[in-house]
Amino acid sequence: MHTAEIHTRLKGLKLFGMAAQCDELLHQPNRRPPVPEVWLQRMIGCNG
Image 1 (cartoon, rainbow, N blue to C red):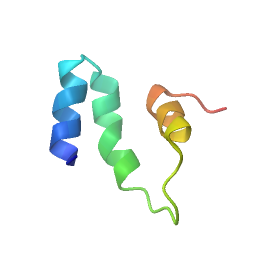
Image 2 (cartoon, rainbow, N blue to C red):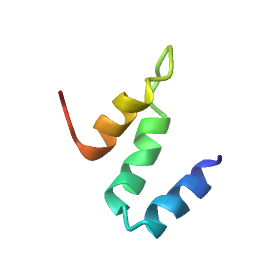
Image 3 (cartoon, one colour):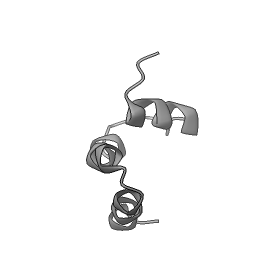
Image 4 (cartoon, one colour):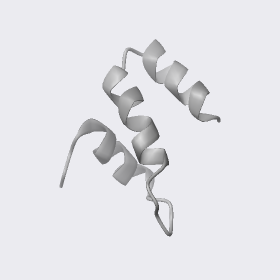
């Protein structure tokens, strides 16, 4: 799924904050992609 499609789907769900965070998360230099739980925690603002 491309970034534009992810943005469109998030905005369609009225998840505007997540859509705004999407680019930042996708372009972070990581050696390994984080597990889905870590992505979700970052997108909803959990620091734990």
